[in-house]
Length: 176
Image 1 (cartoon, rainbow, N blue to C red):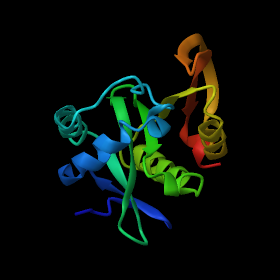
Image 2 (cartoon, one colour; image 1 turned 60 degrees about the horizontal axis):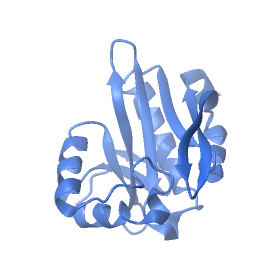
Image 3 (cartoon, rainbow, N blue to C red; image 1 turned 135 degrees about the horizontal axis):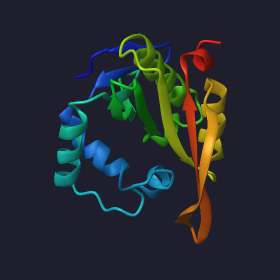
Image 4 (cartoon, rainbow, N blue to C red; image 1 turned 90 degrees about the vertical axis):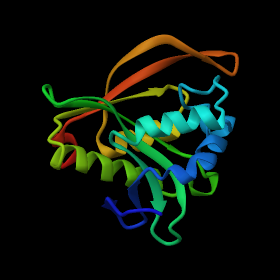
């Protein structure tokens, strides 16, 4: 069962439902999903994913659910939230390939960013993206993220070495 915590025009963010552990496990073992994530080389068992979801569900991590079908299509959330300095790191993935490149990820990220700034009172959100993830880079820049640095040669994927790019966004970048 999903709950409309943050609602957009195409999707909404809902607290994680532990009944979806098998779906998350399938996605996180699918290289087409994880090749853009740090966990690509890991094998995620049902037990391990259940433990991860239990931990993530206590913080600001949400399922991305379509408004039209109430279908779970991915996840997004924050880690390393520092309330003193008003910072956090944000991440997202669309697990269901039918919903990639259709604006769901962009909308879900905008919902989470708006919530982070207006409700959680954060000031700076950061993310990491691999330089070969052009689709994500375009999405992040369109939302207002700016490149703040890069870690050269930080990842080897598909027999090639790539940089990890660091981006951040402030309220004035987002609400422009």
